[in-house]
Each structure stands twice: as structure tokens, then as C-alpha cells.
Image 1 (tube, rainbow, N blue to C red):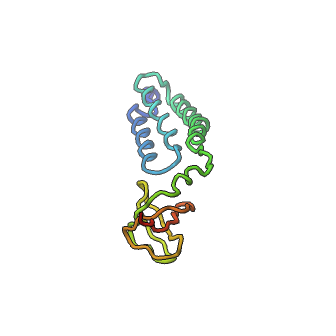
Image 2 (cartoon, one colour):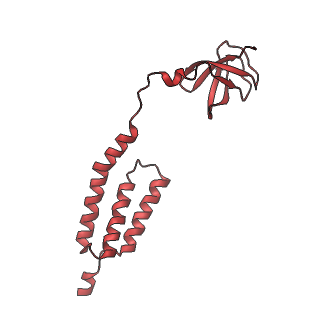
Image 3 (cartoon, rainbow, N blue to C red):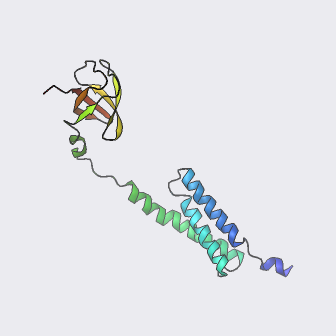
Length: 157
């Protein structure tokens, strides 16, 4: 009976499997780093158990709990705040598109919307003049509204 009490709560490799599973789920499911800060403490506790410094089962759970709560409440909050910082939009990014040339990937009907590849991204395009524009026509960007480029056919010469 005494040997059963002295056994660790989980073997080191079970902590590692748990940690890797949580990290794998973080990659597969978007959780805003929540599972990351549950998986990393499991790996750390697994390493401590493997090195023989984790102590009895209650200490393993306490260590895991402290690391997980600290990671979620302190580190995750700072990480998500840093990643969520936005560059103030002073309009300069939009202004840099004005006057640029885009070649239509498909026919643009009068008053309709078409798609085009522009600077490596797919954009919706509309005709500024309300006229149809055939596929392959080079067009000047006259205005930008969100992800819509308002274009007119480039004049020859």
C-alpha cells in the first residue's frame, strides 16, 4: 500500500503527451493562445517529474495550476494585447494605391463588381464611370473603399 502512495500522480511522459496534445490543439483550433498556456506548463511539469524534482502528486498539480493560471492571466493577456496593436490609419496606405494600374482578371459589367489580382491580393473592382470594362484592360485606381477598388480604363498614351 505504501508503494502505491509514493507513485507519482502522472509519469513524466503523460505530462509530456498532455502538453503536446494541448499545443497541437492550439495549432488546429484558434483559441488565442489559451491552450498554449495550458500546454507549456504541462511540458514543464513533465520535465520536472523526469528530473525527479516535481515532488509528490499534490505538488505536481499545484505547480501545474500556478504555471497555467499565471500564463493565462498574465502572459497571455500581454501577448494578445501586443499582437492586437493596430497601426493608426492616417490614410497613407490607401493613398498609395491611388493612380496605380490594375489589370482586370474578369469582365466588369456596367454597375457590377468583378475581381482582380492587384499587388499580390485579390480585390473587388467597380467602374468609376459605370461603364463595362472587358477582361485584360489596364485600369487606373481612382478611389479605394475598404477592399473595393474603383477604377476607370487607362487612357492610351
